[in-house]
Amino acid sequence: MSLLLLKIIISAGLVLTITFIAERASTRLAGVLLGFPLGAGLSMLFFGIEQGASFAAKSALWGIPGVLASLTFALVYLLGVQYLNGKKTVTIICCVLLGMAGFFVASSLIYLLMPKESWLNIPLTIIGVLGFAFLFRKFPLNRISVKVPVTPLILSIRAGFTALVVLLITGVAQWIGPQWSGLLSTFPVTLLPVMVILHHHYGTDSLFTLLRELP
Image (cartoon, rainbow, N blue to C red; front, top):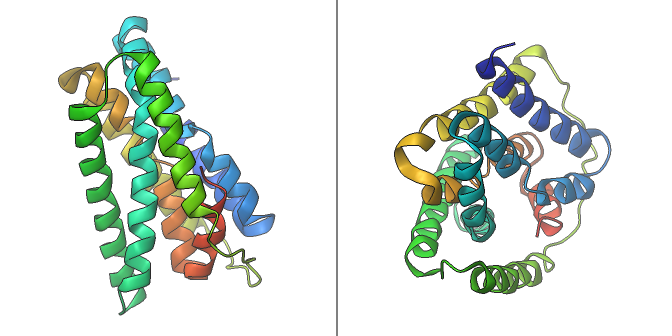
């Protein structure tokens, strides 16, 4: 099996599994699962295979504070949901763009300001995550009551989007170096498509429940 095919299968499988849990079992449980560094872990695996263990180790050090950028994406997306009014499709596109802008701004600030020593950046990251957890815990709990029928087209779109993002991030790693690769590894590869899917099919209430359990 080629490495390209392996990337597609694993990344697509993660999103399909988590969205299935959110839709059929529990949105809260899906949020807990998304709190694990699934996308970053997947990227680190392929960094190690393609760029070597040393590159992956250096990237992992910057993947730790990069979690804050991923949480910034989620927060900015939700702020967009609350303040933007209009057609759902347009709102989703705007929220995704705002969230991505928030992610890259946060990543740039981390790159410029975060200490390179792990004994400093890890405690600072923990403090930041606790701050996000405090904010997200204020979100209401809601259950998905009406399930959207899952069709082959819906599954293909979900899987294809996730695979595309993973291929892009791991593909540019050799040009951007381990520090930026580590930060970009925390790009919400699994979170973004899950949020878009739930937002599109079930509205904003499902997002609050999902993200409440994220940090």
